[in-house]
Length: 164
Figure 1 (cartoon, one colour):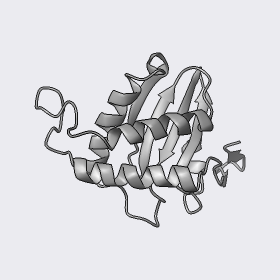
Figure 2: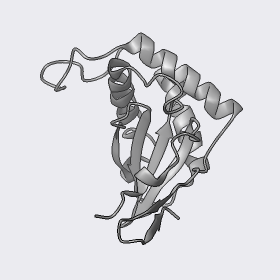
Figure 3: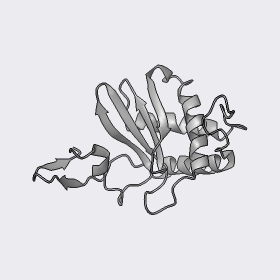
């Protein structure tokens, strides 16, 4: 089996920031890395769930709404993925994400948190969501990272797989 591209990223060197995870089939997947993997605690599930609801709401109502394909959390709980069509750079996404985070910090509730609208409606934490968003916003402002540190992986058959 081929190595999944995201598994070739050196997570020991990965800093909070915004990265292009992959570009293919007309889509760009952005990695919005909120915490530093394996060095800081992951985002609490309830806080990340609230970030997901709020971020999805903002992006799907923003000026780029027609290009938004998916907004969702990473399984490792260290950030979010946003899949877009169109041509966006990490700097474009930084501007959009900054606007989104500023909006989240003004919210008094999380949308779609009823049994009818959410599959786990009790798993939300707006105060921690805002804490994480405020910290991430500061990181995007003070020390922006957008270049992955890459690993080179040798497959069992001797071929080298690297996310170039």
